[in-house]
Image (cartoon, one colour):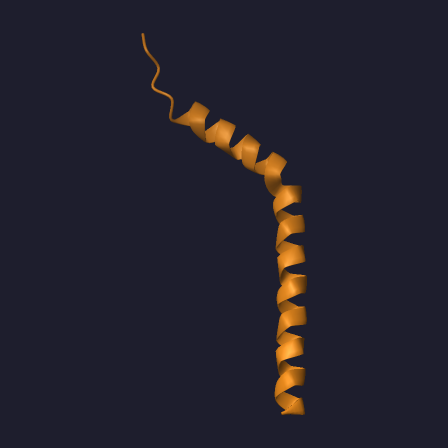
Length: 49
């Protein structure tokens, strides 16, 4: 049982670190996402004449 509990704790710790890493990456990449969205919207905008 102790080995199972230790493995469970390691998995929980890894999941916590991964969630923190992805949250940090999401915050850092948010300005890039806005720029890409703006560029895509501009590229596919239908130009009315």
